Image (tube, rainbow, N blue to C red; front, side, top):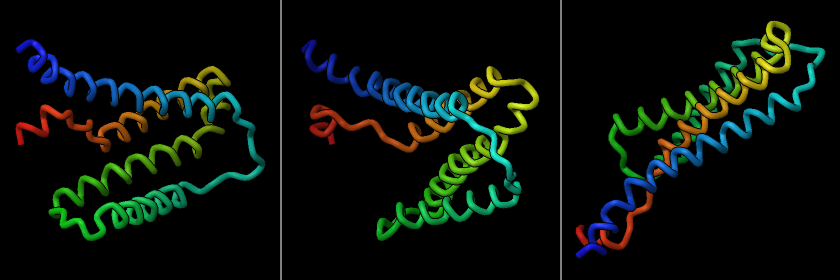
Length: 139
């Protein structure tokens, strides 16, 4: 009987671990973009950040919903999460020169690490924890 109770507890912990894993990977990638940043001679227009985010989110959403029969609400959630992820990443890249000028290398690393962790969390919310054998038996 205790074995059944332990199996019921595992999916909850796995979900938190999964979110935390994505958060850490995102933070590590963000830190990388801050630590190894080298200023460029040319800047990027903010409108290009918005347009690339919109286009990327549309493409990712179309690929994810292809022949799957999602409701409009589910499609909208997929699109908004994709847009948020791409927009945050591109804004982070766009804002690096301003953050570097304003606060130096330390603030830049903190900023890119925070944005990377936020993107990682968004990615974690898109991934569903896998069901265990006991959960599949209940269905």
